[in-house]
Image (cartoon, rainbow, N blue to C red):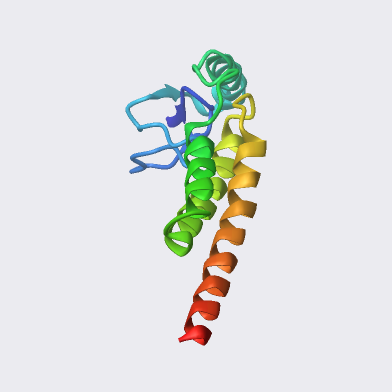
Length: 135
């Protein structure tokens, strides 16, 4: 008997604690006969897609993208290097998260967080260089 993930239909190896495809806990699996794996996989994929649509992400703006954007804006005024790095990291994490949940909004904010974060870092380095050259 093989085990399949009830969320995405991925066939799990013996000893797997998590689904390698969607990350579901191995408790969320169903046993299936080897000949039934393809049918179970299709049913599970349909269930997973329905759950994704109703998952609570639909139409909402990514909090990660908002956080990255806010950090990038604050980085203009204070702690440019530190907040620039945080903004770039959060922006990249938000873009990666949106690959999994494409119905979530905020791609523009995530890209802006990355771009402004880079500007924060470059600007902080330039300001530092100018101040050091004056003294």
